[in-house]
Image 1: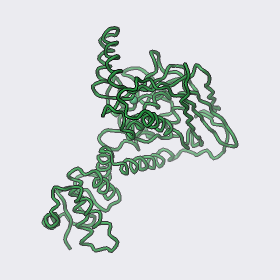
Image 2: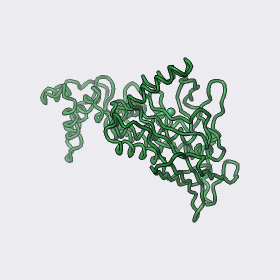
Image 3: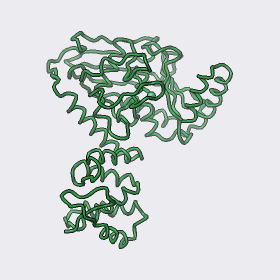
Image 4: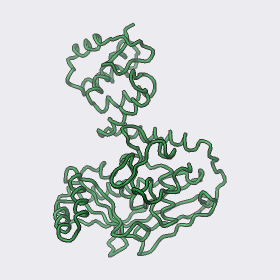
Length: 400
Ligand SMILES: [Zn+2]
């Protein structure tokens, strides 16, 4: 029985490492697919997943998928990633799990949504396994308490708090409700469809809603209620960074601000990074909150991307800092192995697949625990210290 060996990287489970590249290239030549990776992947899929199982066609299918994956086809990378994780394929050189995650990350980062969805679920599952390990899950329902058993109170409302937050205990359920009124600051130039843009922003913020477990396994439902009424104040401001805004900002910074501030703005402008801000003061429940969103196309029509960016930036508005793996932006970085709450999300290429590191990443129980602390203690929660100073959130290092 011929063995599958492809480009020295992977081989089929149970196979020896002898080369079978001849057979692979004969498949490719026969189909004349060598340069058409999409067609290569499609044929690979149909051969691999066909109902009647012919070992030969399964192998050919796998070869075609490997070929397409090695040439960067995101969907093929997704399948190869899954095969490596499930043991259908083994990596010769690297740990198969790591290699599988690498393929999946590359696929997800190229925008293949199924890979992103899979990765997020995979990380959350790993996280539940490691973090809940050894931690007694509180089965007794009751009002939410912190690590020391003290009842948590959150009741921020009124015109001075741009994000209203209220923790209630009703019918045996703890519910944390955020109410936000959005105001769009825009000259309306350069945005393809303002309603669609705002919907994407709104969806990104609503992505924080859901059911979580915090402070030793206590259940907490998070609700996000968003309105877009006309109000003179008490808003969270959404600022799409159009060319007009860009010019005005650059001008203003030229005139009034220090070199350091100008450099920061230049940096944001050139890297087209989005940002969230809290006015001139540090974060508190009463600080001003705005979310600046940039667009790679300049038309603000990359709705999936805008939604993900809004999700990350809303995390800042909720009082969370950024999470980096290594030293950047004046932050020290969190290396793998420091907090078990974060480790399950550290997957590939020095990146945490978590919302405050990668805006496509999921929101974890620990993130919500940090948001609860931000609002109950009226204090921003950090994953990492600013260089030499700044405190780290109490939520880290304690499990859930
Ligand atoms: Zn950020």
